[in-house]
Length: 135
Image (cartoon, rainbow, N blue to C red; front, side, top):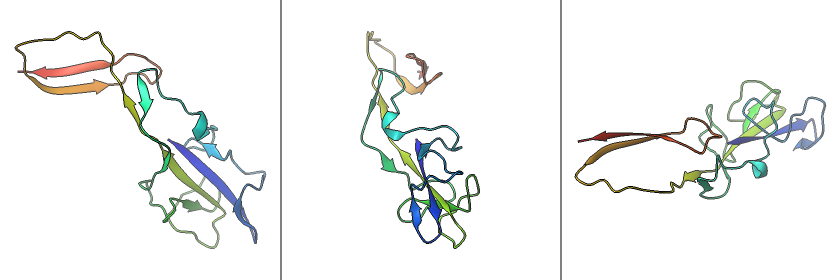
């Protein structure tokens, strides 16, 4: 997930103006760490992207019809509709990845699996913890 952030100049509108308070056009939620969406990689070789980047319309606080949230300045409280004194906006982008498990696998016979839970312990790790409930 990454955020697209844009500022506005009076009578010019939103765009890349290079103002002193401007953030990186792409960043994490705090706006402090540049995070360009095209440079974000999957967690490990066991993960694959499922599709392309999409605007996330489920951002907390709501969004407008294009997915933008507005505020007076960075950082501030964001809201879903532009007000006359809003000079910054952001929108959250998401991309879904899928875990692809690779063997070796061992067939277990005579056991009925009731539940399976997979937990990623570290985003940089190539291993997982798997918890099962057997009957």
